[in-house]
Image 1: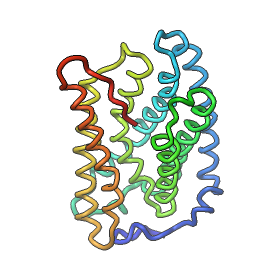
Image 2: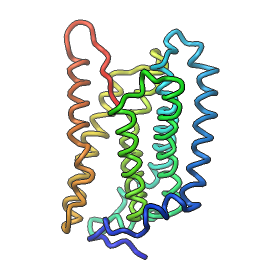
Image 3: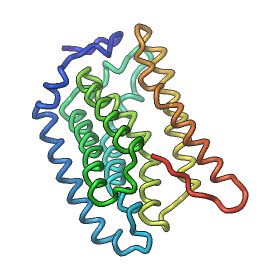
Image 4: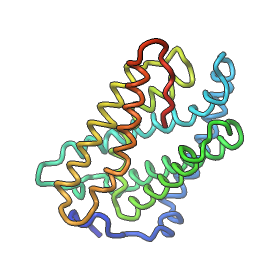
Length: 246
């Protein structure tokens, strides 16, 4: 069933069927295993040997894997999005609703829940209610919602770009020698402010029927607030304080 470009929110699958589909649960379980192997491997070979290898560093091990895989896997879909003609919509994306895009969505979902599991066991002080449980549950629903609407490829294409600064943030949080405040700030501004705003404008102009543009607009104020906090911390005189972000 093709995606209606004017009504992308119309359900194509039932959420229950999405979760029980082999296209979802097989890459989901495989991704959970990958995260476990990655976490214990990086913690044993790197983080535990660093002076700063406490709970905070451990909390970013999974985030580094999540952001790296999301960027590497989602950028090809993002390139498809950027190559669309002005008269085309996201319904013309090759990987809008394919097994490949489902795998990306399942991987990201597994990342959220493995962070909750690993955080509960190994870095509970870093697993906060809002930025941890509530954030992860909300994004789980967002991913499943996009899969059920046949739009997960679009979500992962946008996520690929916006996860670029997370790679820098996670790397710097694991090892302070890898930290680059300027690089993070520039990357954050270009991806989570400029690119994010462009996707909102695109959704508003293309999907003239309904409220689909509201979906990408919802987290935009949060990104603006985060960027403001980074700017205050970076440009403040005297000692620069670390700004806690996602």
